[in-house]
Length: 274
Length: 251
Image (cartoon, rainbow over all chains, first blue to last red; front, side, top):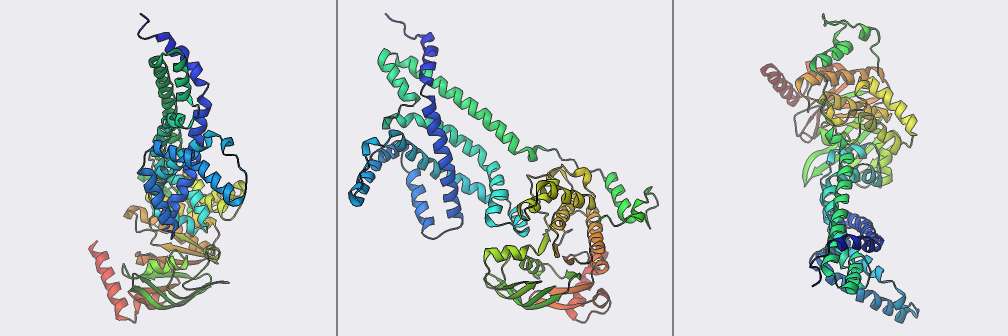
């Protein structure tokens, strides 16, 4: 009887599976970046209650959140070819539907899914930004875009980072669904591998280990990023002791007339520090 | 020069002030006093267009705004004439003291980082915070935060400085350091027009060249500090000053 579990095989599988890692990473990063951009756009539309667009985005977000990712992948897989056929028919063009890489369907589905979820996270983060800071930036004469870039987004990023980080980890694992659109990512590679040696258990354990390690690495990177972004919060409060404040104050105002204890007379001689 | 004519502002159909007229010359230090909720801060925010008036006009030097419509570009030009110091400091919490002061210089005035830092360091020194230049706002006391706010505003080299109750969020013992800083600004920058809202009436009396008394609906009366504090004409002003004196004695 063959061994129930071939432990060495679990580890020898890993390099073979890692050959498909670039595809997994490509889907993850592209979908996250596009999802962030579109998510920000949707959030801004919703916050500013832009007529028509606001309603369209609400329906879009509701649809994406209300349907399984797998179904969205299938819709993308079948909808894009139909769309191309439609374009060909009405515009007399000759796009080859079969030449469209399968990866495109996956990227579209994942990106839209990510955008819908991210838009809610981003919206909540944008709304949490201190109104006072925004007003300070406006009063300095910043344009709307400058306020967004210099104040709103940096502040919102700190708030949104943990949830966006979780979304990124979730997305990375969800890429395993890409095989339904004939994209050979790590999971699909595993299936191919298991199909050739029938060691399904070992292959899926190898895959689980890879995803687990990738998640741990991502968590560590996110921790570092969070630490860096929140450095201003970690700074310990150091307020000048009262005695120092009095000394400073005595230098500037009280010393000339009232303060008998002040040893500094600089303030009398050079009051115009401003 | 500021020329406010027939200015009206409402919130949810409730009038804050109506048909308000006020002219302020360059270099004047105008103290606005009055009970809370009278619309003093709203007037200041209208001057910076953080609030958009419903009717009337505001002219600041060559810039004129006729309510209620203004393009974003004109709004920004208008804001560059003024600079505001806020009650709650409103510092950029992710930036150090230096970062707070250079932000406007780099982003709005498009100065080089080196030039912005030179200007900022001078302003920070002027408010006595050189030793806190790399601190974040949360590491500062309330008084220090407000002095950073003043440095940030002055670094922009505005024609008009708007101070919206700069000491009201501070503990009593921290009020003096901010008032000293403001007093020095007023004494040294003669061409700077300053409008200050404060409940520190003794300070206002010392520092202002003109006092405007505000109450719900608009201006009650205005005059020199001596006129307002010793011989107020309007009954409402007398009531306000008496109540303030009673509160001051009680406290």
